[in-house]
Length: 486
Image 1: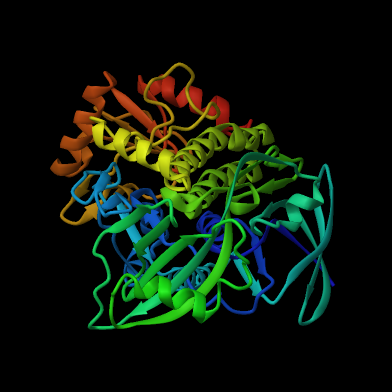
Image 2: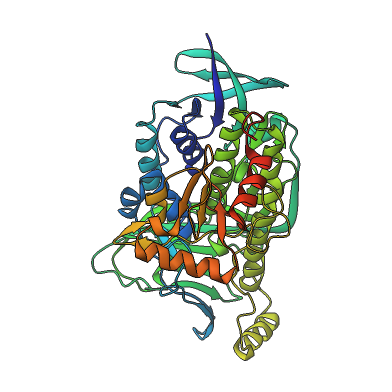
C-alpha cells in the first residue's frame, strides 16, 4: 500500500500531538504515528508554564488540561538543615499570557486531551501501534516505510518531522550529531499517589544536601514526586527496590502515600547540531534534552511545535522553504538559554563535597539576589524584523470578560494598529477601536511602551515587529507570503 500526505510526524508524545493538532487546525494533511498502542500511563514531565497553557487555549483543550493540573507553588532551595537559601515565588506574578505563571500536571491526562483533539480534526490521521521502519528523502519529499498491525505501508510525505524522543530514529536516519554540555548525573525518580491524610510539602523543594541532593515537588492533583541523586558506586538496578526507596521516603514523614513509579534517569544537556536536513526536521527531545531543574523540557518541545507548524503551513502554501531554516535559528538560542539555566541550577544542587556545599550555602545566604536568576529567553534571529527591539518576544494576551485576545482574533498572524490598518490576505487586520475597552487599554499601553503605531504578531504569538502598519505588512509579505501574494 502507498499513500501521500503533506506532513508525517513520527512520535505522538506531547510535542508530536501538539504539532499535529496545530497543523490540523490549519488544514494541513497530516499523519502522526506512535509505536505504542496506549498513552504511557505514568507521569514523566511535571511542569508547564503560562505560554504552554496559552497554547492549550489556542487548541481548545485548556479546560480539559486544567482537570489534570494545578498552579505551581513557590520553588525553594534549602540547605541540609532546612535553612532557606533561595526562593522563587511566581504565584502572584503577572504573565504576558494572562494565565498563571506555572502549573504542575499529570502527563497522561494531558496527552489524552491532546489525542481527543486530534480525533476532531478531519485533515489529521493519528495511528498507534505503528513505527518508522526507514525513510529516504529527496528534493520532493520523504518516502517512509511504516510497520503496523496491518503490515508494511509506504507513505510519501512532503515533510517528515521526528518527534520521537531522546533516542530518535529520525535523527539517527539523517546522521544527526549532538552537542553535549558535559552535565550527566544519574537520579532516582519516585512518584507517589497522595492519600487524604498525607503531609506532603506544599512548596516545591530542592534540598541542597551533600549527603544526597534531593528534589521534592508537587505533580498533578493527588500526586507528588521525589528525585534522589545517586551517589558514586550505587547500582541503578538496585536503587529501584522497595528496600532502597522506602527509607528515603520515610525520612520525610509524609504519612498516607502509595508508591506509583520508580525509575533511574540520567539528567543531561544535549542539543542536536542540525534540526533540519532537507525535508526532514526534528522537534522536542529529538532535538534537545535538558535536566529537569528549570521545568522547561516539555515546554521547549511544545514551543518547537508552535514555531514549526505555521512555517510548514506557509511553505506548503507556496512560501520559500528557506522559511524553515529560521526554525533552528530562532529556537536553538531559546532552548540553549533554558538548558544552560537548568544546568546551572543542577550544579548548584549536585554538590557532594561538604566544604564546597558549605561555601555555596554561605554565598547564597549572603547574596542580595538569587545566584541563579530566572529569566525568559527571546527568540534568536529568523523570521523577525531586523533591528526591532520588540521583535522576538512573546506578545501579550489581554482579557475582557473572561475571553482572551487569542479567542477574539483567532489563528493566523495579526496586524493590530491604533487606527484601522490596511487589509491583507491571510492576515487578521484590526484597529483598536474595534476591540473591547479592556483589550484596547492593554494593547494601547503596549504600543505606547514601544513607541509604535502598530504591531504584527506571528501565528505562534511572538512579535514579528512593531512600527508603521504598512511597512510591517510589506516586511511580513517579503518573508512569508507565497510569490503570487508578495
